[in-house]
Each structure stands twice: as C-alpha cells, then as structure tokens.
Image (cartoon, rainbow, N blue to C red; front, top):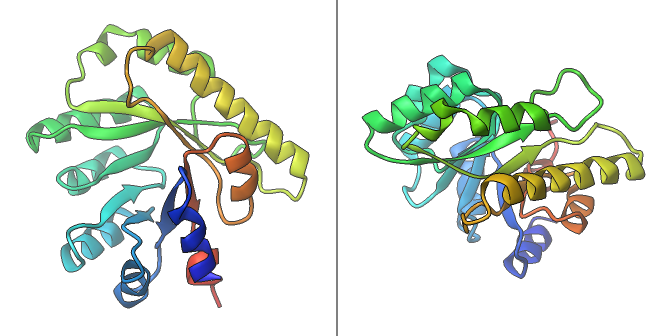
Length: 217
C-alpha cells in the first residue's frame, strides 16, 4: 500500500502531506528514503524534536490546531501552517515570523463539517478578516489557500458536498481578494478515508497518515 500511495502522488498535481504525528524518526525515515519530503505534525513539541533530529530538506507542515503561545517554537522553520482560524493567531504568526526575518505561508481553515468540535472560519468571518486594515499590515504572512476537514462519515455524498463547498470558498476568496496573487492556489482537503473524493473536488494537497504508516495498533 505504501509504495502504491507514493507512486500515485509522484504522477499527480496534488501534493501528498505524510501525516507523521506519533511516528518515530525511524518510521519517518523509511518514507523519506522513498522520496517523500513533506510531513505533517499536529503537536508543536513533537514537531520541534523531529525537526532538530531529522534531515533538513524535509518540509514540515503544521496541520493541527495551533495555540498562539506555541507559534514561537516553530516560526524559524515551519514550511506551511494549515489551520489558521483567527485574527489573533495570524497576528502572532506575523510577529514571530518578523523576529525570524522570514515570511510564513499559511492556509485559512474553514469549518465545513457537521461536527462542532472542528475548528475553522466561515466565509463572512474570512471576508471581515481579509478586509481589515490590521490584516493588510501583516508583512510576514503569506496566505496561499484554504484548508478544511469533512465530517467523519461514510456518507459519500455529504463528504463530496462539503469538499465542493470548500472549493467554492476558495474560488470566492481568490476572486475577491487574491485575483492577482499567483501563489494563492492551495486547497488542503482530504485524508486517508476520503482523499480520492477530495482530489475529484479539486484538492491540491491531501493529508494521509494511516494509509502510509499503518493504523495504530
């Protein structure tokens, strides 16, 4: 299954984020040695430890809910932050990126699922954020797309509808705010159980863990 998944994305325009949370450096290196370079983590301390001990050509993505007081620990090296869901978090990322003299790529996270436990903006909240004078002053953040997680369900059509809605949000924001910005192009949606539906609905980036590393025992 591993080689099949990796081969599938070698010939695809969709980027594969190998979700390596809870996996050992040895397990990650096994995937790295087969050519995978993008890995996703959802715990800051675990990500920092892995970054310090692993090859420096890995692109580390933070894919979990990021607390503001933890941003400073990853600001020097994180490649992409998937789950930006508030102005306060953007403000902190900008502040810490400025200290590191770099610009950090980010995705705006949207709540597209039925579960209330999932985080994310709605379209009107995103519009308010992007129109604000405060946002326009951020020089160390680069918004390159959107991210969302579908409802955990076996209902194929519901998942499909939620992914279609995220694609709609992406196109709306691109037309209203990012029309002249060529790197606003990412739609991060789809995980091990629904990534094929996500790709059909326009995903440019999927987050796959169990199909690559195996399910937790």
